[in-house]
Structures are given as structure tokens and as C-alpha cells.
Amino acid sequence: MTAYYAAACQTDFPAAEDRTAIPERVNRMCEVALQTIVGYEPFFDVRLLVFPEFAHTPPVYDTVDKLRRRLAVPVPNEHTDRYAQLCREYGVFIQTGSFLEAPPEYPDVVFNTTCLIGPQGVLSRYRKVNPWIPWEIHASPHDIPDYPDDPFPVVDTEIGRLGAAICYDWLFPETIRELAMRGAEVLIRVSAYMDPWGATAPMDWWTLVNRTRALENTAYVVAANQGATMSHFPPFSWPGGSMVVDPDGRILAQADPGPGEKVVVAPIDLDALRSLRERRMGHDMRGHLRTEIHGYLRHARLPPAESHPISMNALRERIRSSQRRKPPN
Image (cartoon, rainbow, N blue to C red; front, side):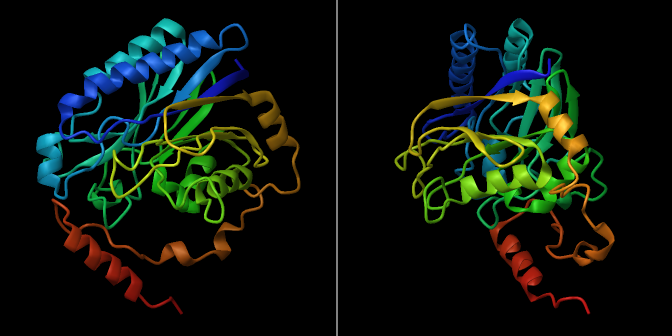
């Protein structure tokens, strides 16, 4: 299938205090997915559904130990099984809202993790590469010596080559460009992007960044954002504004800014995208990239964690260390 619709689905859940809240949230997200698939069926096929960061559990505790004891779960799990069942029944693909993941192989680590799930089951697991420091004490794959998994999985599916990244990752052009250079045609953003950096001027970073990443990588962007009220996540409110953007940076659909559950849908045309990538000579930033002349990535900046569990004090010192680094000669 080279033409289908994608749905960006935003949630509005209260902050969960422990993992017993997850099943009810999964029930609701499966219900939203089913309503979207069936409700739009007379008009077009919705084949990709994307949910926000922290849709299952947010990081409401300030230590890794508390997060692991109260909120974190292994991934995959019984909840990803529920999504897989729905994907098999309706032939769709779901990019899950993120989990706080407690990997058994790393007993002092929590990752912020989203899964791409299709009719065949879990297709990829993406762990946030750039946690929102210093407030997020989740580990990055960058913090794990000899990290054995692919930190930037791109999955070749019947609805295109899909790559996902989480929230703050999108403020790093290098992270999204890595997915694009690995062949991603649809870039998926799983996000909890709060005010004032939301979907309204003068600081509409959410909208600006989504459009920029689409046009600089000649790719579709499907971005689902939290739409939770401030009473659910003090001191932050979450402006929603979930959206789909085309490869030229045009917004194809966007939820009105403001809290609340909302779903927006828009077309993905893979034939048009592939033709555009093959035809284009101008404004092909992937093809025009002069890799060798850009030397800054050869010089380390933020150092990996020296030990686990990660603490906020250690994060702040690592940030200071990065800020004190002198530019290379």
C-alpha cells in the first residue's frame, strides 16, 4: 500500500502514581485507535496511529529507584501484546505512547521507550537518545558502554520505512537526520511538549521544529503530543497541537492547540514521496550534505554517564562539564 492515512492521537490522562494505572490507559488508547480506524473507514484507510510520550506513565518521581519500583515495566510486555492484537485484527501499525522501561539486563537504569507495533507484533523499540535533562533521569543508549542494540531503528513495512524519536530528540537535527539517512520516509514524533514551547506564537517550537525536520529530510512527519491540563501535570500544561506534515513542510492536519483528547488524520503518499526524492535536484538536503566539512561531531560534548543509577546532581555536573568545553581549534 503506497497511499493511506496516518492518525496523530493525543491523550489527556492524569499523572499516574504507579504502574497499576497502565491497563486502563491501554484500554482507552485501544478504544481511540478502534474508533479512528472504524469511524474513518467509509472515507479512507487509517493504517498508522501514533500516541504521545508518557501516555502510559510520566516520570513523576525524582530517582531511578522510585521510578523502577513504582512505574517502570519491561518492554515488550502484556500491554504491547494488546496493541499487537489490535494491529493483527485490523492490519494497522501503532507507534505506542512511551513507557518507562525497566530493562532486566540493566538493573539500575530506566529508559523512556516507544515501540512500533504491526500485525506481526513488536517491530522496533526506540529508547530516547536525548532525555530532557536535567529533569529526566532516564538513561540514553549513549550512557551504556558497548550498547548492543541499534539506537536508531528504521523499519521497512508495507506502509513505508518508519523511524521514530521521542520529544526532546527532535531539537537535535542530528538525531532525526540519522533516521532519515537510514532511509526513514515517515518520521514519527512521540511527544509531551509543554507550554510555552508549543503550538502558538510567539514560541511555537512544536510547530516550527516539526515542519523543519520534514522539509530538511524530505520526509513525512506524524507527531502526537500530550494534551493534558495543568492540573494533571503541574507545573506544566500540554498544548496538544498534534499534526501531520508533508515533505515540503506543509501542515496537512493539526489539532487546535489546547488540552484534551483529539485525533487528526492526513494522507501519506509514498509514491509521491519516492518520486520527489528521486526527481529533486534542488533543496535535497540529504543529497547535498557535505559531511566531511562539518567537524563538530568528531569532538565530544555531553559525556556519557559514568555510573548508574543516574542522579539529577550528576546530570547537572555533566551539563556543566559540556558547557565548559572549549571549541576545537
